[in-house]
Length: 285
Image 1 (cartoon, rainbow, N blue to C red):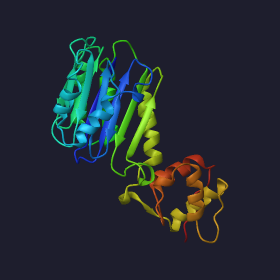
Image 2 (image 1 turned 90 degrees about the vertical axis):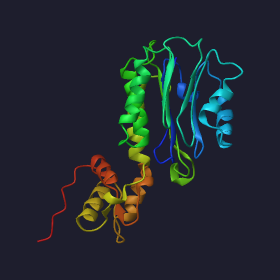
Image 3 (image 1 turned 30 degrees about the horizontal axis):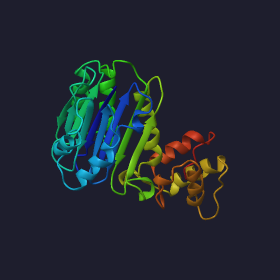
Image 4 (image 1 turned 120 degrees about the vertical axis):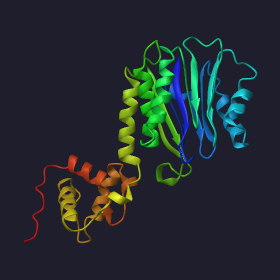
């Protein structure tokens, strides 16, 4: 009923799971991940106990393949499970009683698998896309792999839900959580596309700015920002535009992109997009 990919980033800092299914809220059931530990997906005849048990085994240093073997030892006929740990290849198990087509592919730091699929081309497409998209940011790379599996036929019964979970030590909101991304599309006619849209919004709002692209909040940039903020009802006082920018950005949920004395081009683009038309500030003679 499900196709998924579990993976570890090349630097070992991030772990993630992406999943889609003709099943309500698959993202609430299938994925589990812990920073500096690993990730897993439990599907087909889902056993939710695999999630805490698998992560507990990974924490003790058990290899991914041995985690899979241990978890499915008691009942393996209808189970499908994938695990990735802090090193080495991913591991995947598909029970012989899973509804066809069912199976998986594994590689260094990843595993793709599914059941009730259009055919093996679904997991092949996920694995090939994952390996070929190393230039993408980790979460976007996971969604690209899921999109490839969906385009290859996905769940042969149709579409309903999708989910994405990414963890990194201290990588969550405000640095106070390990959960970098936790997005779910529980019931939608095109859940993989909707998951991609949500990830784009999440990235815009919550990703940390790229230091190489930051602009000094001075000169013409400061003048433009002040005019835009004033048009939006956040007038700039004698101290300059920074206080007004902080006030506005908090209302727009962009506080993760604020840097003292500078402005993220992503924030400036959004500011330009939501403000009433403001003529560009005149340059000095």
